[in-house]
Structures are given as C-alpha cells and as structure tokens.
Image 1 (cartoon, rainbow, N blue to C red):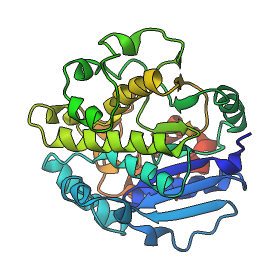
Image 2 (spheres, helix red, strand yellow):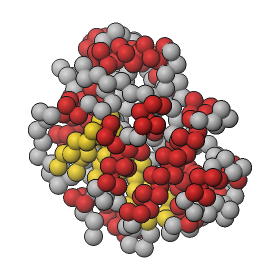
Image 3 (cartoon, helix red, strand yellow):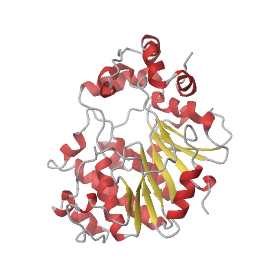
Amino acid sequence: MTELKDFYYIYTLVGTNYIKPVIQSFQFVPKEANIVIVTNTPEILKDVKVDFNLIISDLESLRDDWSKEHEYLIQETDDQKYMDQLRELYKENYKFPMGIMRYGMKWAIENNITKFALVDCGVKVNYVFDPQPALDKFNELGATKNLLFGSPMLGEGGDFAHLLSNNYFKNIFTKYNVRIDNLNDSYLFEWKENYIGDITFDGWIRGFWFNDIKLIKLYFNLWNDITKQTYNSNDMYPILQTSHWIQAFEWVSIILNSVFSINYNTMICGTWDIAHHIRHPEIDFFAADYKMGQENFEWVPTETRDEFLKINREKLLKWYGPERAKDIVYGWT
C-alpha cells in the first residue's frame, strides 16, 4: 500500500517570483509529505524551514548540454531583476521552455522514485483537497495497472495522433524498440478500457504511478528525444509556438500516454485531485492584462509586483476571495 510518505510532488521552478508562491503554500503541506524543488537557483531556498521532507535539487546538474544550449533559462535570484530580464526576453518573442518539467522526472529516476507528480508553481498540496482519497484510488487502480494521471485540459489538448501515423517520430520509437504500428489517428479519442476521464492533461500536473523504474526511464527518454527533435526540425518547431508565453509541451504526453496505454499495461486517469491548482495573476504582473484576459478580469499591469498588489487589490480579493488571498499570496497585507 503506497502512502503519502511514499509519494513525491516535484516542482521544477525558475525565478524567485515563481518559487515564493510555493514557499507560501508550505504551511498546508502534511508532515509526512515529500516536496521536491528542482531549480537553477537552489540558494533561494537554503534558509527555508519546514516540518515535512523538503528536497532541493540543482536543475543545472540534471540538464544535459543540449538543454542548456536550446532551453534558455535566466540565472537570477533577485525578484525584480529576474522579472525585468524576463520582460525584455518576452519582447524578443522568448518562450519559456515549460518542457523542462521533464527534468523533475530525471530526478525521480536518479532516486528510484516511481510514484510522483510533476507540478508547476500554482500547485497547492493539501489545500482545498486532501490527497488521501486520490492515493486510495491510485492504490486500487495501480494494483494491476501502471497509471498516468492528470487534470483535464477541457478540450484544449488537440489531436496529435497524426504525428504517430505520419511517422514524425518513428526513428525515436524505433531507437527504444517501442511499437507504434498498433496505433491509429483516432485511437487517442476513442473510449478504451485503459482510459478513465479526459486523457489530454493540463500543463500544471503530470502524474506517474508505476512499479518499474525502467518504464519511467523509457517515458523520460522518449519525451527528451521528442523535445530535441522538435526543436531541431523546421517543420515541427511551430508546434512549440502555440502559446504567446511558453513553449508548448502538453502535446508530447498526449502521444506518449497513448503509446503507454496500449503497450505497457497503463491506465490513463484524467481525474482525482492529488493537489489543487490556483492561477496567480500577480506573478506575471507586467503582462497581466494580456495573460489573464481570458478570465475577463481587467488587470492593470505594473512595473513591480508590490505595485500590482496595491493597484489590483479589489480585483484580487474577487479573484481569490479574502481568506484565500491571505492564505496563498505571499506579502499580502
């Protein structure tokens, strides 16, 4: 029986402004939980005191030379300096490489961890949702299956199955002796016995519940090689550019989840709340008018985070609610 003490939440975080919301939420984390922070600035967390198992890992020690060359990350510990640099990069059409979440998986492999979730900075552990019901369900389903789980994208995932049938990545699957000739274009969106709920997962969580570390290694290697080939292909690179702010990566899991579900006794679970996710408009304070526009909140962008909290205070109270604002927004007064 896998308990919370056997499960790991792995954050891959860059930039103090994105790390601090996670630190703020540490107050809710149960004592038996494991939280891993993979970051290129581990010194930011050196003085953080907690009563659960907090593990800090240097992202740069996990990344290979290709990633360091092609997935550019700002190396800056000062909040404002980091955001100022990020803002200038965005003006030059920079896309943050969210696919670096896969290096949280590499940390898991190096530590022989097979049950974990890769999560982003908006994820709150044991806030709103008690993780135990999810663990109970995963124990039940995982008794006979491997599990890949996540939060549904609500129809925004798109159909990338054609990338398999058109053999874009045939060389990669052949390299690892993985069958793809048993898949077809419609397979991903048909109801199958290995599916529960939506199978296109949102970017804030990628969950793994496996019993064999070799399969975790395989998933990582496929994800890693697909990422590299996509960057290096003029035909494929536009797939990464579907967002104004990040290099898209969710589509890779749509492909890999399908491959694993048919080849490796794996169930795709698009449900169960192992954690809760909250979007933080104050994080992207300089661009909040665009980034959060889809929620119909007319945020006023500012030069600094503190200024954003002051000018948009009433809107933030409506966005979060008074208690949540106090709970999860660091520096809220």
